[in-house]
Length: 356
Length: 119
Image 1 (cartoon, rainbow over the protein chains, first blue to last red):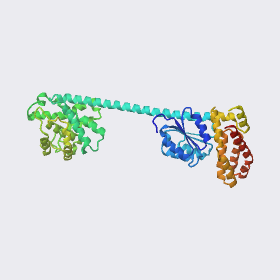
Image 2 (image 1 turned 120 degrees about the horizontal axis):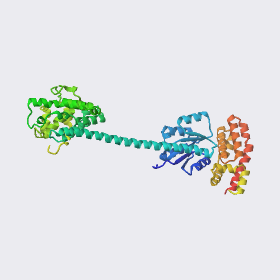
Image 3 (image 1 turned 180 degrees about the vertical axis):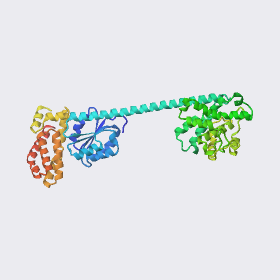
Image 4 (image 1 turned 90 degrees about the vertical axis):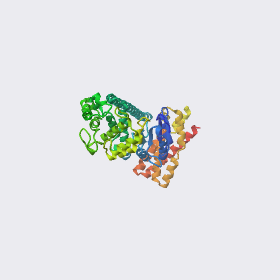
């Protein structure tokens, strides 16, 4: 089978005179393929499927009737690829009805007039060709639109990342924190059980949302945000307000509220310091009251804080971090989440520079 | 096709103009078709089946001959076979069979003219 224009007409008729007459009508513009009976016709049809632009089929042929051939072509769904014309002197209502039901394009009477056959067949061939050109134009356009949508999505990601990074920059930490939370959250949802039940689109939105978990820090004074030592109880209370403030901030921006990821972002910002045992803040949510995606961001946040350098601490090595997480020393987490987390921790470590 | 050939074919019952027209002006093709006609086996088949009383075979053969003679513009034979097929379909077998009296000589003349004039 060749790739290229469909420009062959298949003529199935047991009368060689008819085949030559029909072939002659079209041989100037088309290639002619001949078959003398049903089985040969089908064989050649399947062999040349991509090249055929029309089939001329006689009804009374030995071996297999033209209607049987038509049934087989129909069963293979090939009638969408090219038109089939019945050329026959048999005009019973039954034959006609079944032929049209099966999807024959036209029935041409024998004896035929060459100019009529030429006209009727070429018009339809042209229609099929125009239709398939249109279909491929539509496909091309759909592809273009998809690419543009992806560009827009990338743009949104870029903007959100910028905003979050700018806010994070106040606390002297590098903007890599935001990107790491994004990567860890995405990894856990995509590659472990915690992400079961979320579609790929939802996971993408959640990962995006996770970048905004600390936007509330913009309301925290520098002296507290960047204090190199331990916070006093009063300072700690102020620091704790960044979650609620973050959620407030996000809902105050109309264009943020309009984002698909807003619902996730709001919850993550407000509740990423909640604890499995209910002793977190600001709402004291317990257990499964905390959405699983927020729990994922929470553990990512703690993990990141432990492994990285912060203004108030040095980086801690991975082995110790795992020890601290599993002992409950650094937050209380969902046991199932912990399992999934530990099962892929080695991979998550790769998001950090070799020092760890 | 030279004039003599044309004449002879016409006398044998072929409308040469109609034939060439059906070949969209391709004269070479029209001659080829006439030669193809000589290879037909439906005539002996028709004769045989009428003798044996095989009605289905006879009808198929006559119907095919009707188509073929029509395609080479052998107009008289076309009319004769058309009539024969009609009678067979109506169940008038005897009158259909009796038409061979007219059909046979016309057919033989035709075949003779074609083979005689086309090398």
